[in-house]
Amino acid sequence: MAAVTERTWFDRRTFLTLLVAGLVGVVAVLPYQFGLTGWPAAASIPLLLVLTLLQNGILIGIAVLVGLRLGTPIRLAAYRPEAVPGRGLAATYGRGAVVGVAVGALILLLDAVVFAPLIREAVLGGAVLPAQPSQGQVAWVGLFASLYGGITEELFLRFGLMTLLAWLGWRLVGRPADLPAGVAWVAILVAALLFGLGHLGATAAVFELTPAVLVRMLVLNGVAGVAFGWLYWRYDLVSALVAHFSADVVLHVVVVFLV
Image 1 (cartoon, rainbow, N blue to C red):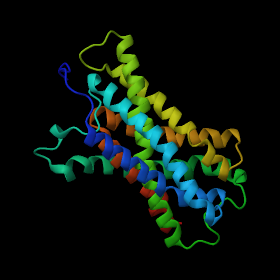
Image 2: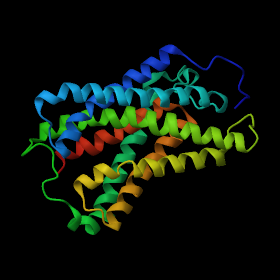
Image 3: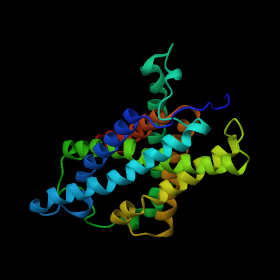
């Protein structure tokens, strides 16, 4: 990579696009969350929705500002248009989809072969999506939830957190023209670990938190986080978004019709 030239880091269109996309993910995941924790009273849903959007809007806005501002000198970008000419959007971001599907398949394989025998007794009774749901109901809830993982989680974990970690490491090593691979990998791994820890609440809703369950949570989510972080570093955030969404579709939609 060449040295970064001075330029305006804030782009209003990019900021608003990412902010709105992140909020769409927040709304989309609510049926999945309510399926795990129980649906609130109908009268309280509008207020809950407003408060959820307000709180998450502030956090997403901060994450996007961090990504835009700190990603500029280290060449971590939301979108790199130079990667598209000659290949086209489908070919460029199809790579992210392929990686995502592979990650989803790997997680299913690891879960079935390695972890299922260890955690079978830790499953909590009653921790299911809406009572006696059909495959179609579960699939659409999973598809909506995939928007949260694919967009909102990537804005928080990769565009916000990983960018901050990479920027701090870049400064510590003297601000070289290129982001060193070692610094990038530390940022990828730490963000992936925190990505795994961020699933503690959802895991606790389904499983008793035994050591095997915690290891499963960290390993399976960590594998995904490393793959998405690598895509963000080597290509752009959109590649990571596409991969994360594709992986979640495998895990929350496709698998519904396979079991």
